[in-house]
Amino acid sequence: MAPPLAVAAARPRRSLLFVPGLRPELISKAEAAGPDLVCVDLEDAVSPDRKDEARTKTFAAIAAASAPQSELLIRINGLATPAGLEDLTALLRTSKPPAGIMIPKTRAAAELRVLDDLVATSPALDGLRFHVIIESNDGLSDAVAIARSTRRVASLLFGAVDMSADLRCANAWEPLLYARSRVVHAAAGAGVDVLDVPFLDLDDTAGLAREAQAAAAMGFGGKAAIHPRQLAAIHAAFTPSPAEIARARRVVAAYEASDSGLVVLDGKLVELPVVRSMYRLLAGVSPDAG
Image (cartoon, rainbow, N blue to C red; front, side):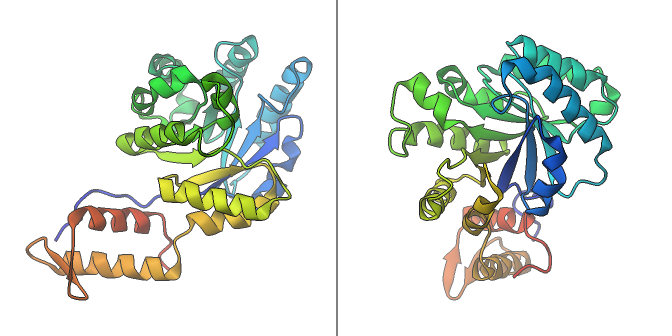
């Protein structure tokens, strides 16, 4: 029996670690900590008077990077700002771009379609992916269209700080439950990854673990981090256990051995949506895992 849905082998995006734009030499150190993505931040981590310096350093560091271990991104400034337009100009001029760009303050799908048209003018950017932050009321309203706007969209990221300010609610789990759920819904419908906001208290490891586990249960595939010591708890929440991997392999084997499309495992019928979930789980798992 053929797979019930085409699922290519996927590079996991469980964790994303930020590097300040003025310190791009820290990229290799960040990669050594083992995140799935490393993002050099030209936006929040850089004061307005040092944007040019950070941009120059960052693009030079990206061009010099050889065989990065992690998926390497640059968080540009908002496209409606002068600094964001200058970031985009630098991107269009580079011959050695990052794997993707993180796009903050995204309000509508139309913004990404225009950006896609601009990026398409540079052959060097053919493989560039968009990692889109949903952090405003407008962005939340258009999240479904944003996720489907262009083939370059690889993930949505939920931005809690700006979102809570825009929604006039507390920056806490319960008040933002609907907003988080809507971003997960948009990403799932488009078949793209979805990551949760960083946990900002470096000393509360237990709180980080609880929030990461809650995000995983909600449907997020990963979570951003502000320090390498947060990665262990994040990976624990978003990495399938050996038992989960073993069961997924048994379900898939039973489905592929069936000539009727019915899967019976341990005397119980396994419905097709569960089989699809098992294929998705295994798509991000190395062959020797578990």
